[in-house]
Each structure stands twice: as C-alpha cells, then as structure tokens.
Length: 256
Image 1 (cartoon, rainbow, N blue to C red):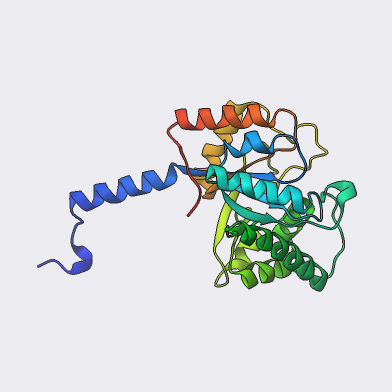
Image 2 (tube, rainbow, N blue to C red):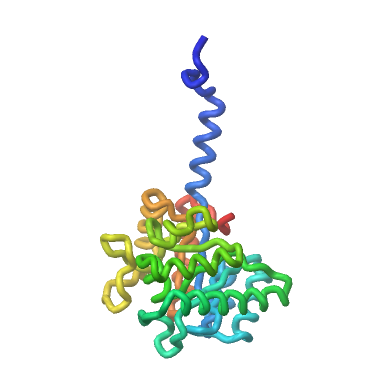
C-alpha cells in the first residue's frame, strides 16, 4: 500500500485545484484615490471596485468625503481610508520628516474621522492605503511603516502596499495585507514607483497598462490595481483599461 504522502492526487482534485488557481489569478480589484476634490469622482465610481477616500490632510473635506462615501454605497464599491501628510500645498506628495508619534496620531485622526462619516451612512471601512509621499516612505522605511501599521491594526483593517515593502513585512501577524500594483505608473528596477518628476513616469496607453498588469499579477502577486483619478484623462483611461482587462479574461472584483 502506498504511504499517504506517496499517493497520487485524483485527476478530479488536480483539475479542480488548477481551475481554482487560474480563477484566483484572473481576479483583479480596481482601486482609485477619490474624495480629493477632483471633478471625475462620480464617473470613476462606476468603473472601480474599491475607493480610497481622502481624509482631509492632503486634500478633501468632510462634505467631499461624505459625498464619495455615498457614491460608493450607490455603486457597491468598498471603501477605505487614504491618509496622507498634512501638506495640502503639495497635495501630500512632498516627503516630510515626521516622528513616529506624529505619523501615528495623523493616521489615527484621519482614519477615525472617515470611519465616523462612514458610520453615519451605515457603511464600514475595509482598508487603509496611505497617500503619496507617506505611502512611498512607509513602503521603504520602518520608521514610517511602524506607525502606519499600528494605526491600521488599531482599527482592525486591511492595509494596501507595494510587494516586498516594509508595510508588507510589518503587517505579518498584525493585519491582512493586500499587494497593490499601479496601472498608470512605471516602476524603478527595485520595485519602487518611478518619481512623478520623470517625464516617462506615467503610462497613458491602456494596452501597455494591461501588459504591465499581467506581469504584476503573475510575478508580484498583485491583487489590487490602482488607477489615479486626478488627471483630465482619468475616466477615458480607466474605462479603456477595464475593457482591455475584461477582453484578456480578467474578472474585475473587489478583493475579499
């Protein structure tokens, strides 16, 4: 008699496992940073599955955030907090020197505020995605990742971040982590995002974006894909990207 570990799996089980793997690999969430005062939120909300909503520090205000929450509820889009540095002048995209205590307080304040607005409307936050410079710094530096993770864990939420980042490392045993990729941004060789100051930092061709997405899914384990909503071509790009992904066999669905 064969030992248990030597027994060949049944063809039915092997086929089922393969189909499950393929189906999981073909699922992708589309997330967008909204509630930042840009004019395309309503149209974008019909095209995405997750919305990262600004909490007032880098952009937005209570009325804008509440409107974004209401639109998300109308279209069945899950919502998360998008906390950033207190730097409205530079849209939260300038790197700031902050202590861990300051970063923790900033994040708790912002997440808590958005959670309260969501509760008023019978909604619950699902995740946290840091914004701009805070995101980039938390992905590479423990001194920024630690307080972000402490705030996320305090609220019992999921965190979004780059693969193999410090956010991912520090999330272990504390809170769920969802690997994020970017459809409209190019990458450096080390896996970080190319600085916005570079003329080739952005991808404008949906076909090129789909090729990058396929690579990110199969090589980096990306489960959610960010598309930015703060440019004039955002709606057309996201609509074309969604159509191209669907034609390639991907299923657009919010991450569980």
